[in-house]
Length: 289
Image (cartoon, rainbow, N blue to C red; front, side, top):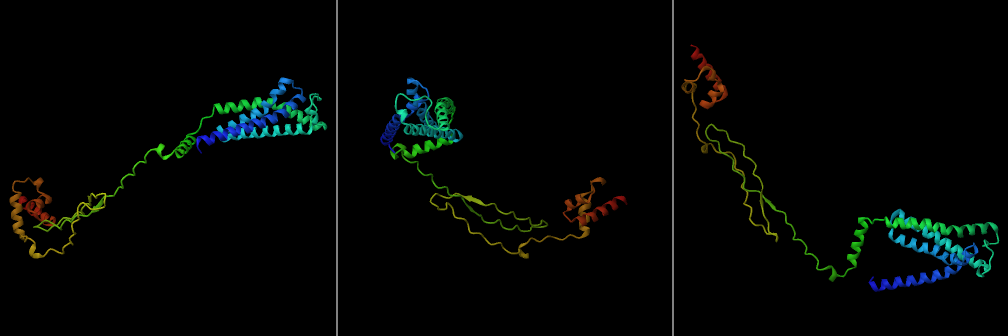
């Protein structure tokens, strides 16, 4: 709703409330005069009742949670009290005259006592409840959620020209495409060396353009070949035990007895662990002889 209709609505509400207060003011003034109030007190009495109703209404619009419910209860209580006083004023014609018996608001004594108690307790209640409502309003701090709702509502009420141009949408993020490179070929056994275990290749990350086109094509994977033929392997010469012993004897001629171990002989002549132990025993026996 624009500012002009809101202003007109508020002005109309103030006019209606003002006229209603004038009607209620006449009845409450006569009731106050009947319970012993002087001319000035009877004139101010309607402001005590209906004025607290207006204060409770404002507090209801400001406060939240339990404080707001308390303000609603005060508003309902004083609205009911004002209704009762206006009703009594309409039932008792003697209240309309200047001369009226003090303390007589009803012919039945219990009803009269209750009405006098109600009329005399409203000013005291206005002091208590009005002070409490003012203290709650002064110590009230709006929560961040309420501020966020108000800011969101104000943004929705603004026109598109006031809000400005909308921010451009972010560019879509395309995840990179993982392409497997060509597998590493199986190593070939050479000489006495055993073939090593081929490691699995790591996936390569190829950047992709925003349009979805791949920057580089992945190479076609080759199928793993079968067993290497015997003709492609290198021929390993076989040595006799005497040749191994001659090589071990020549290599360990200057070794001390403490260094004459099977592991060192195996690494020197490039033979198996079992043959290296046999060579060690033979060399130790020769040195002992």
